Image (cartoon, rainbow, N blue to C red):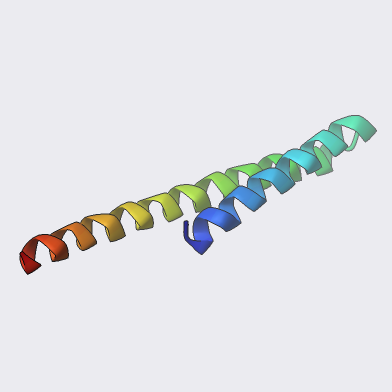
Length: 67
């Protein structure tokens, strides 16, 4: 797991808490911020997942060339 994946998951969790708090207290702005944090987290996480897949593919290629 890389830092983008971790950061993305943290942003998603933070966003869910903010959204729930916004709904609970009737604060539309806080709810919207929570939704935005969740989207930001999903994008970061997807970027991190892609980086991890690329790294794995490169390592596979390197391993095959060493044989």
